[in-house]
Image (cartoon, rainbow, N blue to C red; front, side, top):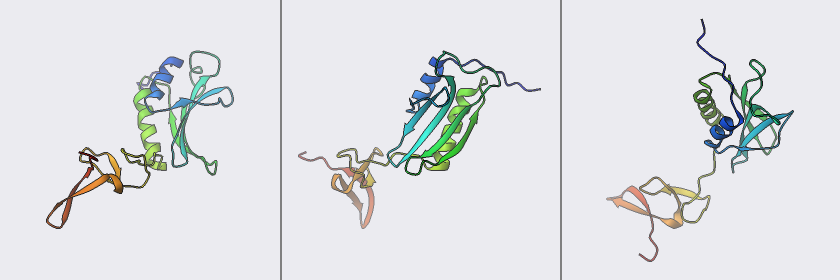
Length: 155
């Protein structure tokens, strides 16, 4: 016997949950609200919410699942990331499927220098922030680089 129980998800709940992952509402497709996060490497994460354009709750039981898709913006190709059933564990299931899709299809932002915004990142600060060669110094122990730090100009 299955312990999965269908739940009615409101638009407010869905929007709030998807905002945690940087997803914003996009143009609807076939009467369904779509949420997208664009990455600066030419990829996007898309969530087909099963929320109708007009209305405050998702479709009826069994009508449709929440679907996750990876899109290559340059080619327009789409890759399936999975689906999430609208059951009581939908939030944790959605989080898991989002992270699986991000890893599987390499969806990410290009690292940027925290000081100047350059995409030519080649090191990190002690705090783990990305930096470019212009904004870092090497800390040596003998001939070995042991860490990188952001230079404090004028300090």
